[in-house]
Amino acid sequence: MLLRTAHQLTVENDGIVETIALARGISRVHVIREICLHLAPYQAGEKPITGETVIAKDLTIDSLAIMDMVMELEDRFDVSIPMSVIAEIHTVDQLADTIQDLRASQG
Amino acid sequence: MGLFDRHAGLLEAYRDVRTTGLDPFQIRMERVLSPTEAIINGKPTLLVGTNNYFGLTFDPSCMEAAIEAIRAEGTGTTGSRIANGSYTEHVALEQEIAQFYGKKHCMVFTTGYQANLGVISTLADQGDFLLIDADSHASIYDACKMTRAEVVRFKHNDPSSLEARLRRLSGKEGGDKPGNRVVVLEGIYSMLGDSAPLKEFIEVCKKYGAYVLVDEAHSLGALGDNGRGLCEAVGVLDDCHFIVGTFSKTLGAIGGYCVSDDPDFDILRVTVRSYMFTASLPPSIVASVRQALRVVKARPELRKQLWDNVSTLYDGLKDQGFTLGPEHGPVVGVHLPDRMTAIGFWRAMLEAGIYVNVAVPPATPNGVSLLRCSLCAVHTSEQLEHMVEVMTGIGRQMGVLPPPKLRAASGR
Image 1 (spheres, one colour):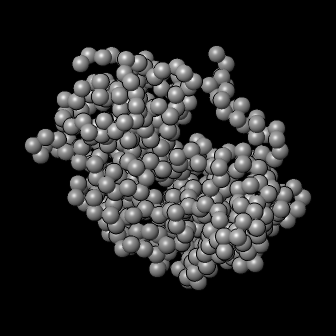
Image 2 (tube, each protein chain N blue to C red; image 1 turned 90 degrees about the horizontal axis):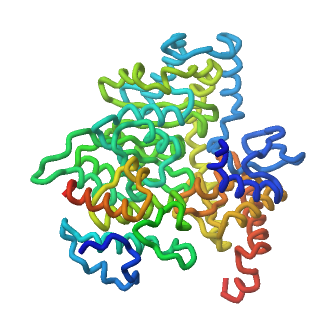
């Protein structure tokens, strides 16, 4: 699957994500879907969360909550994202790329 | 772009605070009368937010020691220890703290902040891994910005979260990533007064060969049979490679320290920049700290008084229905629903003659708004019972607590 942005997905907290097997080569769509689930509470107005969404700017999430969300995603995908790397991540796409890259290298 | 544009959001929030009344971040203590009382806005105010856990700021023996030192050696050292040399008293203080912990080495810093900043950023460098609790103090976060080590946060007080992160550093087929692992923990966390599950953390660190640094800033004096902190209380002093602490709380002055058994520890004296490039502690501070340490050893009853006072305040507030930090501690954090409620509550308390700290995001974990109270061994139970009454009244007025009628109906 080569979906690049999250707006092509229906984001529902339906528990399906929890049932996805955690193979190292997890698909990008699942990573983005999980990120969107974590970001949904911070959605500003009706504007959908997409791959291009700038997390700290387009949403109502503060820097501390971003760090805590990243910690949840780390455990969900079994990767550790160093703080210096988090600082360089701006968009949902970049976060997904980072998680996928780290899954490949930390596995 | 203006220099302060990046702070626009903060400026706006801060303006809200300042224009609606007293500014909790710029309070003036017109005169401090004792460890528990000051004149604020022209009237005597009970201090329950100054980290003065043993009340030693006005201990006559500590004050005399400081005055004597000024007469003997002057007001300041006018430079760092690598440039102006160590005074005999600096060395004596380091030996006494090392002995207090039963460790071989001690380095004294000019503030506790500088101790964390310098030691943590120097211990872990390029190729190493720093693992820090998510609720770590600002000095630890700032140290992380100064190191080339990879920094990873784990969930607050969660040994399994630390373990997952240490495990990930073990590569495929048992090939570990090279580099030291340094884990940073705190004895008591400064906002909610909760302590780390240190025994469990130590087990995880041993399993993965990680070094452990524990910051006992808020637990020195308060925990352990001899007041050495959480490391002593849970029996893991020998397993903590580095213990950091401060002189500015229980010991009533200012300064920081780090103790260790590592044979090469002293190399830090020529590598830690926050030690090398700042003026050393003045003789008066060194003298009062040495005396305060003697008082901590000689008067264990102060520790008991402190914890009795913790119980009076914590249990009193809990009984009235306040939401508090998870456990008894010398810091009692009172949860309030939002920033402006916390600030309004804080102001009402100050008007009623009680000073506490207000802690709001981003200085607090999980974005909570808190009134942060810190107990003192020399608070009287009457003072604290009065404080519970005042807070209950304000809590009801502000709708933070249910009105008394409802509580009666609930059978209490």
